Image (cartoon, rainbow, N blue to C red; front, side):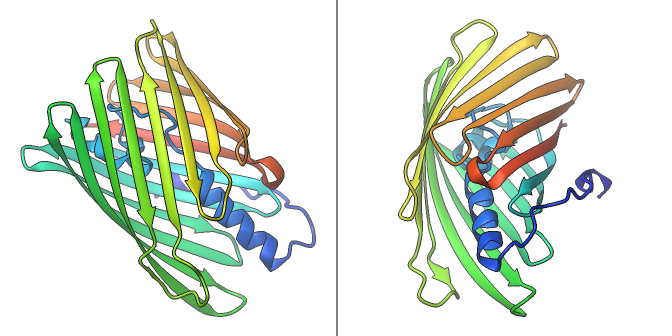
Length: 267
């Protein structure tokens, strides 16, 4: 797809070690967020809280290209689709992250259901392959995910998500458990405010605060500040008919900068 080939290579720092490259890709994948707010109208929320799929009534198809430069060149291409039906909400996502040393393709399947009027729950499973070109070997990981959202009013939505590796071909690697808690408030005119906490066994707690502000009927600005890993990001969304285009630039602490271009189409 031409939409996924959007970035030209940028010269990276010299003398990049294999360890630095692997750490860069791991951190980039873990802390890169395609949708900071728990947005019940956007399929991008399934990357953190798949239970929001129950609010996506129309079929949504989305694609993104993300490029990071700093310690090393890292590219990410993402495709996802989902829709809510009478039997529940179904979604899938396909992603590729890597460079000339390490490639990490993955595929995820999601199913969400409204358990009560204000509560939804989702079960997901992600399959990841990690290919190392220098060592000529591949490793495989299976990560189930359970998420839930609580929407007591039209202005407030909260979410909880837990992921845990249950199968990993890496030797001497402990299963990683990743937790996320978030909330978004839509009660301010033209604005929404979001807060999120994320943690796993090998990292500190990342706390972030995001603000979305509607500049025009079709233009929306967004900014996020965080205490670590991704200290700051800013971007713009532009909507025209059934298509929403987004651009975001993000600082990844000591790892460098990333640029993300997203497209979302609602049928």
